[in-house]
Length: 393
Image (cartoon, rainbow, N blue to C red):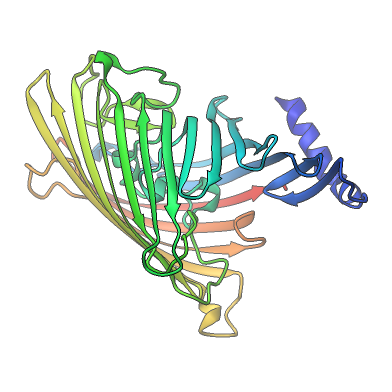
């Protein structure tokens, strides 16, 4: 793995020389989605990029799910993420592929193949982040905050293996829609099959009222002069031994025992809004999740919501630094609606300094956290985080 990193670093130092070569029909190199190699009149293309996140935290990095977790305070310096990304197309521009390798954990995160000849009907097979919630779909390198909100780990279905049909019903007016219809194994990253012959089914419908698709990225770094927005609903149903999914695969939410085959039937839904306009950005998600424990004959309903807003104040005050964005977020979730006053809260404010858009940025945030754990222990605390996120190419 170190050899690969040294090769990538060498490419950075010699990139100016490479890009200075005269373009010909057989081979040339450009900078676009990383380091792009083009072959045979663009019949083949290979993209390579490397991204790292370097983070310092004080008191808490992740959300303390239990009250006693607030006593475990520490200062951490770590390489939070380090990824190698490889993509491109073969033979035709619409026969695409993409893979992403986690250097820190050593895991293959994404490997997918796509056929995208028609905008209204596309096909994807492999492993990837399921197109469910906007917050999770946004790459960690394109996020507005240091990391995702406290509700992400509770409601995400994360990476799954399967097949998906998706597309855009293109219209320049308000009749512009996207859809994703997917079938997955339902057991998370690396899970090739489910138990009891069950599968995970997902449907996401997204309305683009302004006739243009809002990209999955945070912050209005493009400074859109025309309002661009989206409204989406999505639903998932799955029966497995898991109540939660993360980058590690399937697991359990706090309060749930390690499952057996077919123990948990999980149905969840979301309503989502987002927009960007002249440096102002907004995103919001409302979640519902019902867990039917078919072994203990118990049902648990979870709800959650978050909203996040950011603004480049340069648009209103010319003396304000142009690369500086200020943002704020509020999130909460209730792990069991049958228990009153059981909400968990996050209040976050922060700022970004963009050196080169999301390719090179420095992010600082402060969070005030409140948890009312399953043991009815109420606790609160503070969190400070500083992160540098950079892509090599």
